[in-house]
Image 1 (cartoon, rainbow, N blue to C red):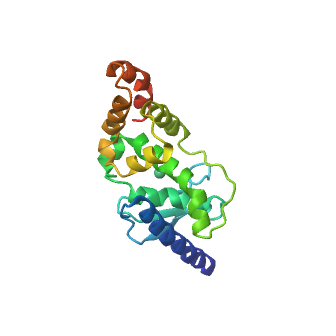
Image 2: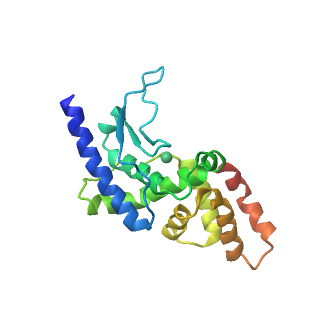
Image 3: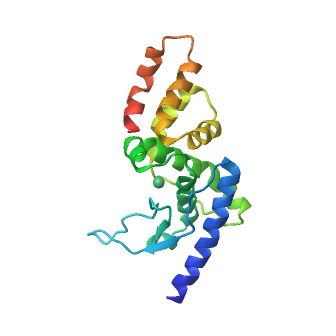
Length: 196
Ligand SMILES: [Zn+2]
C-alpha cells in the first residue's frame, strides 16, 4: 500500500509538471482538477481495460498496469493533452472522436521527446501505436492544407472540437484555390468519414 502511495505521489508530480509544460507550449488552460486515481479494472481475459483516461469530471484515472510500463510518460502526456484540448465535451467527442484522439495522440508524439528532456524524465524508446488510423486520416487531410505538422495539430488542439472538421476543410479549400473545391473534397472524403 505504501508503495502504491509513493508511486501515486511521483505520478502526481509528473502530471503537474506535464500540465504546466503543455499549458506553456499550447497557450491553453488545463481543466485537470488535480485528482489522480488508480484503477485495477480488468476484462474477462484479465487484461487491463485501458491504460489511462481523463474522466469527464477532469480527474485522471491511471491503470495499475500502466504504472509499470516504460511508456507511462507518453500515456500521461496524452491524458494531459485531453485536459487542455479546446471544447472537449461528451457530445462533440461522440461526433468527432477522431479529431480528438488523432490530434491529441499526434501532439503527444510530437511533444514527448521535447517534454521528457525539459522535464528531466527519462524517455524510453517505445513507439506509440494508439490511434494510428485516425492519424493517417488526419495526415491525408493535412497534405491538402500544405501546413507543417506542428502548426496543423497545435491549431486544431486550440480549435473547439466541434469546429475542427469545418476548420480543416476551410484550410484545404484555401490551399487549393486553383481548382474547384468539390474536386479537392473528393480526395479527402474517405479520410473525413474515417475520423467520425
Ligand atoms: Zn485519448
